[in-house]
Image 1 (cartoon, helix red, strand yellow):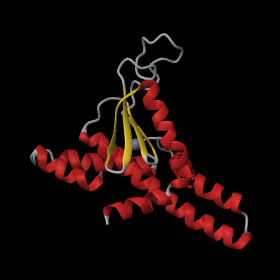
Image 2: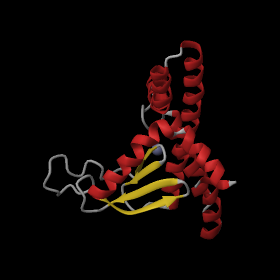
Image 3: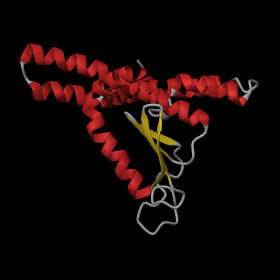
Image 4: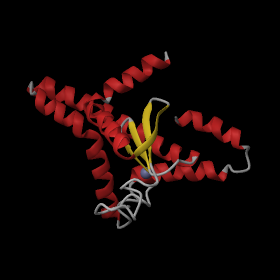
Length: 184
Ligand SMILES: [Zn+2]
């Protein structure tokens, strides 16, 4: 049953996974270590001495990712360093958001295909849906007069989930890991 559900999630997200899975593999080969699956998501950690993380690297723009904890590209996550369990939960909240946006895009794309018969347009809507979701949240944050990135709806959700879990610090670490399983 688990495999069937994951297969459906991958089918729903195929428009972007076709690009982000090769992308995370390229990132891993160039700068990553510890390629692994976290649940159904392919992950890599950037090496400390890699160009994105190391400000002393000889290439221009070295260290541009040094202060970031992680980035989610659909079913792929690039971590800036070995992630804490809270960072993992944060990024996996983004995975769930992307999956929701992908499903919405797929349904909308199918509707457009049904009405117009234009398969290219339908695919574009499917492909762009998660990115439109992110950009829309950023624009709404700007219109609200708050920080476009940190106060966007998807970051609010991820940081709030992190905060709620960190407030449960009194519970044993293993218990936290049990909670983590719900997210990953
Ligand atoms: Zn985030």
